[in-house]
Amino acid sequence: MVLPFLLLASVLPHHASVAPYRQPQLAAGHGLVVLTFADDHSIYFASSRDQGRTFSQPSKVADVAALAAGRHRGPRAVILKDAILISAVVGETVSTGPHAHGLPADGNLTVWRSVNQGKTWSKSGAINDAAGATREGLHAMTSDRNGNVLAAWLDKRAEGTQIYGSKSTDGGRTWSKNVSIYESPEGTVCECCGPSIAADDSGQVWVMWRNVLQGARDLYITSSRDGARFEPARKIGVGTWSLNACPMD
Image 1 (cartoon, helix red, strand yellow):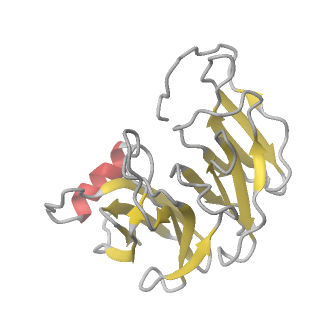
Image 2 (spheres, rainbow, N blue to C red):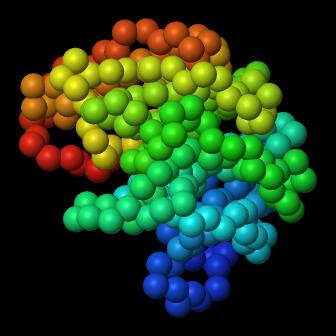
């Protein structure tokens, strides 16, 4: 996590906002390195064509009423052959309460697309098909070797928190019906630990998250060939970690 923060400091001017530049994320591919980050209620983008040696001046992707940022929440970027995608959990109303953390009360996982290297952006809409289901604000996004885009997130459409996902085969314009990647038999996965998603060279998609089973906060993983049907989840490692708290990662 050190490199994104160093890059953020190097490409941005001094800023005196109450909620300054937060949660930088990097992506690389197709000759580009992309940096995206949050600033108060705005999402920003900068890019590099020389392998990260220099970056463009940041430009604004969107202004939103409520934006999930901080504590590993924030925008994510994916670089496709003919488009750049940026995703973030946004909403119209800011949550209140002792553990609200400024999250959108009605948060939806939303995507913006650029087909001109980040000069302009268009909003594709929400990935989650149950309104407000992504309000916890923790998600991950990647692309596979065929240019399909895959997303995974903490989903709260039911009483507990579960892992859901979706796939786009048209460059992020539209998204598939949401699929349940994992539902914990004890009712919830770790409530504030963001999932990870990656696609390997063989076309396999991998999703990892932190579980809650019998008081243990162990990491679990599953995989899929098509982004729709996932293998039974399995625990990573041979030990176990008992913790009556959320590690936030």
